[in-house]
Image 1 (cartoon, one colour):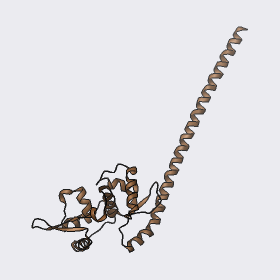
Image 2 (cartoon, helix red, strand yellow):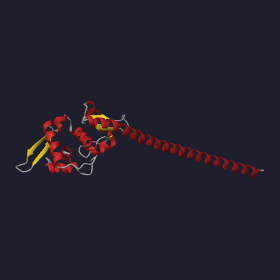
Image 3 (cartoon, one colour):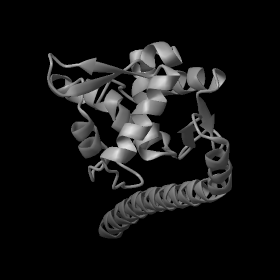
Image 4 (cartoon, one colour):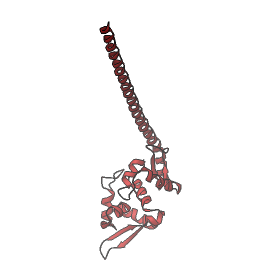
Length: 215
């Protein structure tokens, strides 16, 4: 949430505990939805400070606020951090969805531009591919605890099966469209042939009438 808000609402960053709670519990762009309280967030912030990911700032003598150090901690670029942030906010997801969501924080024009970002993160162990590359591929971040990683592995099969079903469905639609286009082409060719034959018959009839009139 700290990373997301730093990118999307920089005027409200760094963030207070209350602001972080609100950001965690918002209803859009979150999966699963959460209902954290101040104690939950303060505990998480303490753990993150110990890891060196977060710093507490005395905001001009008022309420303390927090900022992240994700760039230094993870050693990533701005687009790479946007991709990881969306995966942290929503978990495993299809590449197309990931591109659209990450693009609200950093410009990522299309899947062709996203692919090398994902490949680089996978090579450094910061992301995992949960299904084979291709249409509907499912990916996730790799910052899980061991128990969470086990759950991810168990769920990846269902993600992969869903992606395969979607791909088969799209392929069926494409085949049907191709078949329909082929049928239309054949009908058009037959219509042209019939028209040509009719013209030839009309021409033969005309010649026959001319011959009969000369007798």
